[in-house]
Image 1 (cartoon, helix red, strand yellow):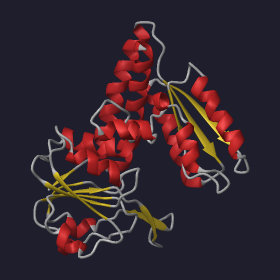
Image 2 (cartoon, rainbow, N blue to C red; image 1 turned 45 degrees about the vertical axis):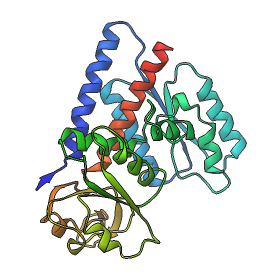
Image 3 (cartoon, helix red, strand yellow; image 1 turned 90 degrees about the vertical axis):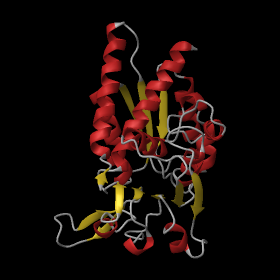
Image 4 (tube, helix red, strand yellow; image 1 turned 180 degrees about the vertical axis):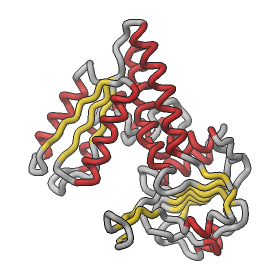
Length: 293
């Protein structure tokens, strides 16, 4: 069994990006600039955005953090997004989700310039990805693809089961795993809350990608020997034995499933660190696109 070490690979990617940025500086070129909009004071969102700012510092990017009140109107938020769209100094930006109830999330995501949509959520980028055209791939699926590639996990002709159909992970992964190329060329089954006999399906899978947010949902009896497991789930489970009073758990019963797996991502330290690394990679791509346009 091989651990797909997202922390290690993400650090390698950051080192590679930092080297490219240094070359840009040596040539006297403008370095990539990533901005993030955060609305309100959600603790998890603040932690995540701050880690993105630190990652920018590490690789030599410029970064801007736009903090807005949770009471901001949709009109005011759209105005701020328009400013970032029109600011030539900003190569890419993200709007941290979730947003307050008074704001239409879909309307906000549609308002982001696709050329600066380094989260890869805009329909233009999603559509290009589906058509195998050059685009920004959503950071988490991009990170999973990178992990599979760097560990040389065979995907051609394999049966991939995706658990979950969100536009952030499940749907993009189903497209990417079925595309021509590597990683890809697998036969994909998408399962969700209405899927019947899910154990019958997962037990036939060569690769399982699960993004449910249901702690330890996937049990050892649901998988076959030598399965490849990608666990995207991350849930805080109360645990009084831990200093913080909780432990972080994925969708997979890691202790038991890992005994049957050929490759498996841990939680934490698997897919999570890759997400930020690929956000940086998308921002680097955006900078290059702007330089050439």
